[in-house]
Length: 147
Image 1 (cartoon, one colour):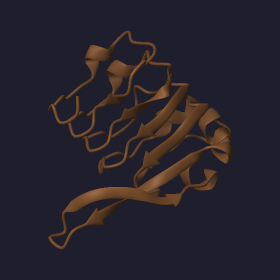
Image 2 (image 1 turned 120 degrees about the vertical axis):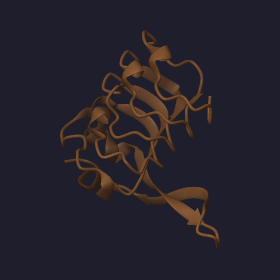
Image 3 (image 1 turned 45 degrees about the vertical axis):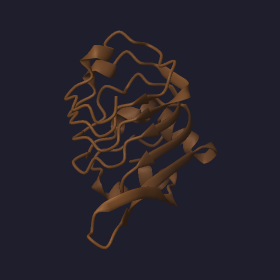
């Protein structure tokens, strides 16, 4: 479902568990409200990179996921909705300085960072200053990703 120009994910309303990887990158999604009922995707990936997200509202009920990828959303300023994620493999974000609202310290997500990985993705630009790929940048600490 990548690069299909979806503007919303309302078609996911009522889904409680992802049983397959869900790639929604490269669309024009501005919100994730249709994902409010999703609680787990423990063995699967949810890729939301390269959209027009301003917040991750809609993911507040997500508790378990293998990989969450939200990098490449330059307007994303609020990532606090991931506060309830307690089990995950890896989370990919942009430069944390762009986030004005983050998960609170003491939340399930922030408490689990000691045993999990959160990376700031970095862009590799070609000589024409176009993004050709992303790579794992700095591994983030609780104090960097949480408020």
